[in-house]
Structures are given as structure tokens and as C-alpha cells.
Image (cartoon, rainbow, N blue to C red):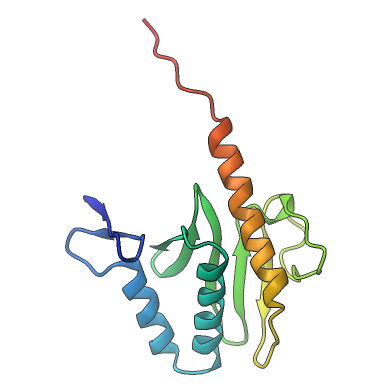
Length: 148
């Protein structure tokens, strides 16, 4: 399937389907409870932290935010909204936001429960750090050499 980047949302979309941004809007509306509100709030903070972020819809219904690679996902469960950072183990977390998936070598997550307060300043710093990590790794990739 062909993908096109939409200038207005900075996201890709399938040739004959809704954009990832529209799908995320739909998920927020479909939830219709505190989880939808939390996902909406997290999404807003992600966009504030990194205006160049690209929204994606992967793995049959998971909101994903990318900047030179995956920054984080926003999964919703019955009792929690989980924000998983793809390379969270490589990020400094001085505010101690990571509270889930701590045993892994790569990912880290933040579980938000109903009524949870968000440390906006620390979360935005974490998002910016994840984007900077992705950007630095993207720049360091050596050019592929063609064999004769």
C-alpha cells in the first residue's frame, strides 16, 4: 500500500483510509471515560514537547509517536493508560516517571491510573530526550556502501 505524508498532521496515511491522527481521535472518543481524557492529555503534551512528532497507528490499533524512530506508544487498558518509551532504558529519568517495564534492557513505561497527576515539565523533558536520542542515532548511521 502506498503511504503519503500529510502536511497538516505530520502523519502518514494509507491511500484509502483515515489518517493515524483521525484514528487516534476516534480511540479517544470511543473510550469515553477517564482513559480517553488521559490519552488526549498525554497526546497534547507529546505534541507540545516535540512539534515535529509524527503520529502513527500500528499493531492493529496502538497510537505511536515517532521522530526519527519510535518515541513512545499510548496503550489503553481497563485500569491504566500506558505510555511506553521504545528506548526508555537509555534515557535519564531524574523525576522518576518510569514506573512500569523497569526490568527490560530497552523499553520503559509510565502507567497512568485514574486521577493521576502528570508532571508535565518532566514528561516533556523525557519526550525531548527520546527525540534527541533518536535524532543522534539517525545521524550516526553510516551510509550503505554498494558492492561492485
